[in-house]
Amino acid sequence: MPEWEPVIGLEIHVQLKTHTKMFCGCEAGFGGEPNTRTCPVCLAFPGALPVPNETAVEWTIKLGHALNCRIAERAVFHRKNYFYPDNPKGYQISQYDEPLCIAGFFVVPAPEGDTEVGIVRAHLEEDAAKTIHVGGETGRIVGSAHSNVDFNRGGTPLVEIVTQPDLRSADDAKRFLQLLRQTIVEVGISDGEVEKGTLRADANVSVREVGETGYRTRTELKNMNSFNHIARGIEAELRRQIETWESGGEVVQETLDYEVKSDRVTPRRRKEEADDYRYFPEPDLVPVEPEADVVERLRTEVPELPGMRIRRFEEQYELPYYDAEVLNGSAALAALYEQVALDGIDAKAASNVLMNEFVATGVDAAAVNGAELAKLIEARATIPRETFTRALTESADPEFRAETYLGDTLVADTAELEPIVERILANNPGQVAAYKAGKKGLLGFFVGQVMKETQGKADPKVVNDLLRKKLA
Ligand SMILES: [Zn+2]
Image 1 (cartoon, helix red, strand yellow):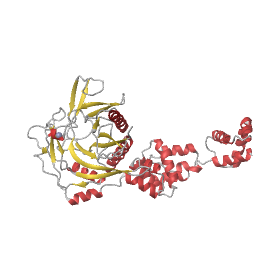
Image 2 (spheres, rainbow, N blue to C red):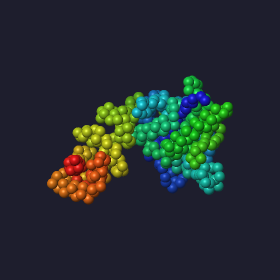
Image 3 (spheres, helix red, strand yellow):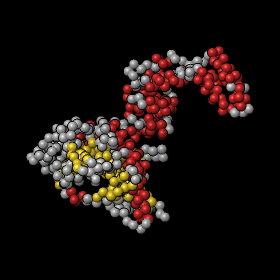
Image 4 (cartoon, rainbow, N blue to C red):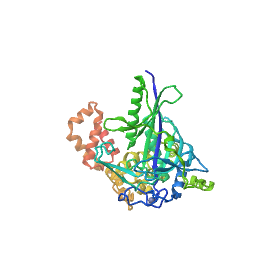
C-alpha cells in the first residue's frame, strides 16, 4: 500500500466587529430582534447606493500586516452573482482578482519547529443574511418545513482568508486555526467565536502519494462549528479519499458536509467554478486605494502577535515550549505572567503557579494586580496550601492584597508539631512497622495525617524532617 500525504488548505471567514455594516449605517453584530437592523442598502432596494466602511478597510489592512501580506495599492470590489434567499441583491459585493491583502504567510510554532503556512489572499466582502430552516431534525434545509431569513446579519463586514494547501495533517489545521483565531482577537478586529459563527472555516482536502509533486482532486468540507469538528471532519475525509484511491476509484470535486454523529462526510452539491459567478467590477464603488502613510500607521498598530510571543517567552524566560504556549493562551494571561516574572520571581515557578493553579480558578487574568500576585507567589512556601488557593481565587478582586493572606503562616515550630507527630505514629503502629520494614512510600501517608490534623497549616518541610527523625 502506498503511503499517503494529506494536502489541506483552509478558507476562513471572519466577521469584523465594527459598529456598523460594510456598506450602510445599520448596526452590525450578533443578535437583535430579527430583521430590525436593516435599511434600503442592505435590503437591496432599487437605487440604494453602498458606501464602504472605512474602519472595515483599515482593519483588513491590519490583518494583512499580521499575516505578512503585501497590501495592494489598489483593490477593487466585485459583484459575485448568485441567487439565494439570503442574498437580496442577487450578488454579493466581494473582491476578486484585486484583493486588499496578497501573498503573505503565517507561522505556527510547535515544539518540533515552526510550520509556515502561505496566505494566498485576504479580502473584504459582505456577509449574507442568516437563513434558519424550521421543522427539520438537523436544522438543515433537507427535511425542514419552511425557512426564515434574518437580514440583520446581511451586509456585516467579512474578511475571507485563503491559505495555500500547506497543511499536512488535521491536527496542524486545527493548531493553525486556533492560533489564527487568537491573532485576530488580539489584533482587535473580531471576537472570532466559532460557536457564534463570527469565525467560520472551510477546508480543501486532498491526498497524494508521498513523493508525488502535483495535487490530486480536492473536495471542500463545510459546515463545521468547532475546531474539533473541523479536525475530525478532515480526518474522516482523508480516510474516505484514501479508501477511494486504494480501491481503484476516483475522488471527484464536490462540496461535503461533515456529520458529527456518524463521523462521516456527505455530499452537498457540485462545486461551482469561479466562472459561474460572473464576477464583474462593482460599478457603484470606486477602487480602494489606501495611502502609504495609512498603511504604515496601521502596521505600527499591530500588537506583538501570540505566535511570536510564544517564541519570545521560551527565550526570554527560558521556559519549556509547553509553558510558553499555555501562558500565551490569552493576551491577558501572557501579560499577567510577564508582570509576575519581571517582579523577580523565578520564571519557571511563576509559570507553574499560573499554568497549574491560576488557570484552573477561572479568574479573569486581566483583572489581577500582578505585583500583588507576585508577592503572594513569592511567599507561597510559608502559607498554608488552602490559603494560597483561596488567594488565587480572590485575586481578581480590586481589593486583593497579598498581605491579607501572608499573615496566615504555616506552623513551623517543632515544639508545636512534635506532639502531633508522635500521636500519629502511636495511633498507626501497623504503618510504622511497615515503614521500618522498608515501605518508605508510607512517609507520604504520615505527612498527610499531620496535615489533616493541623488543617493544612503545618510546614510540610518541618513535618518531613520530624517524621524522618522519629522513624529512623
Ligand atoms: Zn443597512
